[in-house]
Length: 71
Image (cartoon, rainbow, N blue to C red; front, side, top):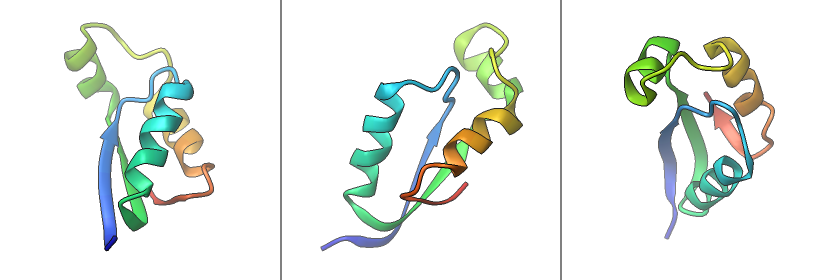
């Protein structure tokens, strides 16, 4: 039985096919997938470098994926 809502967080800097496969896998477990996009400051701490794309740009990419319910 699928959960009504699911949540995952991504850096998505630079978005690639691995991100898409991860999100599809997450969506298999829920009806509505909510994706958190890590802020630039978090990406810098996590990866040890500044992100290639700003948070707003990464969020727009994730929003455009048809099976993502909300970011």
